[in-house]
Amino acid sequence: MASSFLSAASHAVSPSCSLSTTHKGKPMLGGNTLRFHKGPNSFSSSRSRGRISMAVAVNVSRFEGIPMAPPDPILGVSEAFKADNSDVKLNLGVGAYRTEELQPYVLNVVKKAENLMLERGDNKEYLPIEGLAAFNKATAELLLGADNPAIKQQRVATVQGLSGTGSLRLGAALIERYFPGAKVLISAPTWGNHKNIFNDASVPWSEYRYYDPKTVGLDFEGMIEDIKSAPEGSFILLHGCAHNPTGIDPTPEQWEKIADLIEEKNHIPFFDVAYQGFASGSLDEDAASVRLFVARGIEVLVAQSYSKNLGLYAQRIGAINVISSSPESAARETSQLKRIARPMYSNPPVHGARIVADVVGNPVLFNEWKAEMEMMAGRIKNVRQQLYDSITSKDKSGKDWSFILKQIGMFSFTGLNKNQSDNMTNKWHVYMTKDGRISSAGLSLAKCEYLADAIIDSYHNVS
Image 1 (cartoon, helix red, strand yellow):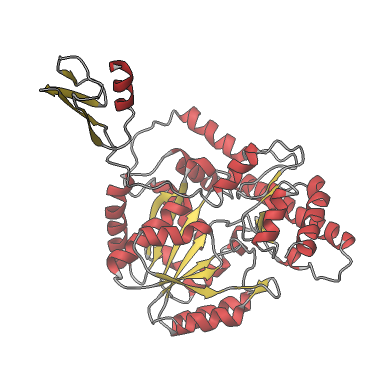
Image 2 (cartoon, helix red, strand yellow):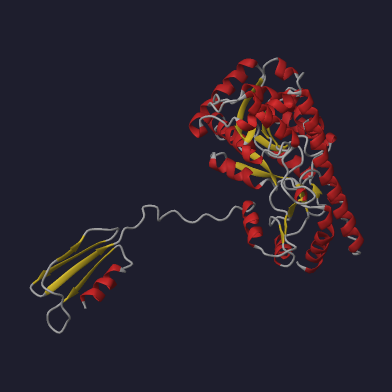
């Protein structure tokens, strides 16, 4: 009796409980007092004149109030893909370049830069808070052009960040600290992490219209209206090239009008440049939007990433740049960005920074890099063309699919809604984000016909 009773007591679900028996007509334990104090739970028993009282205390975690977080909408796609055993499955969710064989690609120029580090015997000492000086010089020159007056006049504050995400986060913290109450306007739609970054930095944001579902193109009029109606001095988050997730960029003429309006409203543009050289294959062409604003004397923030154009996904290498009106202002901004970075991550990693500095700083490696970027951008363009050809040859409904060719960069916005995107995954084993975005960089020419069948079926047969 005693052993079964103790077993039942040890499985109590509440933090504490009391159990008792009386002498008359009830089972009793022996006359010894029982006390247990070992292990995560404690049990005690005392006997007093035929009555036994026992208490069981169960430790409850102090972290019980922390709920389970939802899966990341982008990275969660890869987890679902891995769990699928289908032979025809396609992972078009995460933005990472793949070869025609759908394998990860390490650039040859990156391997050469790493060999240079080994030959030099580079150490692994801490970098300064602002990062590797050679990297900061190279990345600013790559963004603006080495002969840009802003660089020559020392009006550029550059701090190495943890790729694009970390660099955006530094910029967001700068806004929160020194522009209290300022709002950031973000395109609708935008990269899934943008809102998280500003939320965590306690920076208020709202959206401006960008995507037009009727044309699967740019809602330029809506964009202009929303930027115009924003409070003066707002920050406008702009994608420098290859807009994520839509792949839809303003034309050069439209960029001019956007700059006109931002200047008129005294807004501050905040560029996210994640695909320089990777979108069109030209470093200069992909930086044209940023350079336009800087040439006008507009003060700007620019976050950069080398995940895509150098394939340094896991190295977390990027930068936050503030181009201001004077060298004194740039010096102050550098000091405050360092102050923000110090308690956040102390100092940035060195490996990727040395790769970028060596590739950009060595004319031979630099030219090889440009050739590899053109190759990667060219493969994505060929995939777009093949997908368009496959869809238009199969779909006789008269729907205009030309947006596939008009979009640029790693991603293509299919125009499929959530239910249609679910059908792509559940029926066709095509893994993608629920907003209809697919990564063209994760597609091969050989898979275009299969993807075309999936898109046509989902578009016409699922509402």
